[in-house]
Length: 284
Ligand code: CAA
View 1 (cartoon, rainbow, N blue to C red):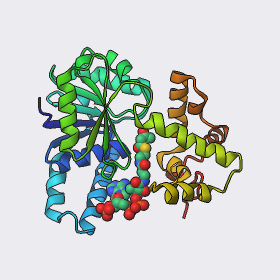
View 2: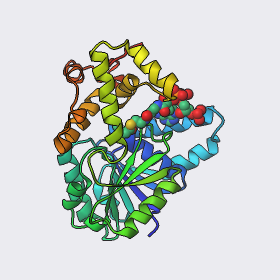
View 3: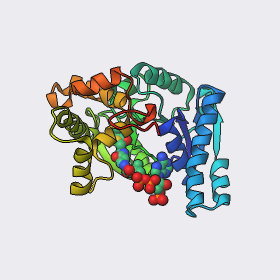
View 4: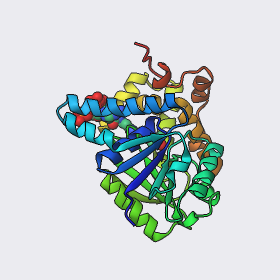
């Protein structure tokens, strides 16, 4: 089955990026947010991101208008009834996601595939909340979605082979490189990335080097686009803490335990770029 009519629930940072790449690939997209204000925020985030490409001469103004024309917005999940694929990108909270999927399962036609963009929750647990575990899959995009080339396609023991194939084809269609992972804590990338990012916080906490030198070490020694402390700030320190708690709960291994300094920073409201302060100061 080809996924042509795409629904995206949640139009925040990740959701709006998914909407953008799908519409850019020529697909009809319906995006959902709960209030008119959040719909406007989502729309302007997409406009801004496409506008950047126009300014750089990488996209024509006409193509930008055509892409925006393929995107419709709604505040009602009932409107996803006819979608081929609905990707959920709501807040990273099990209860909120489960409630969303229970409703989608009720309103969508039986053939609709449901996908979660979760980075850390169990796809199996989300799928079990629906009556269509065979048509349930993980589609984990990376931030910033328009730039990062990867999508983790996450299968459970119940996911139909046909849905896996369609999900991979969808990821390729929107210009991404799909990798297939089983549903296990952190999938591939966060399972490897989170211990590294926590280690950077631990060595900084222990006074090994300045934050700038830790970041420069990985940027200029290993060719990473961002150093680990910068990347912690970029992802969001609250998000890092939350993912760490889930992975530690799953594996009970110290390398997944959020470092004490991370906890204190979250408690202090230093959440990284989004609050203007994390390991670095972004207020200016
Ligand atoms: N939306 C759209 N385009 C964007 C963008 C955004 N938010 N941010 C940057 N870009 C584009 C720019 O337009 C530019 O495009 P061109 O090359 O076509 O001109 C390109 O990206 C580079 O941008 P900049 O020159 O402005 O900035 P940069 O070179 O410093 O790159 C970056 C910014 C792409 C974010 C880069 O620093 C990077 O790749 N950082 C690492 C990001 C990363 O690791 N993300 C994964 C996080 S982990 C995750 O998401 C999973 C999880 O579950 C936690």
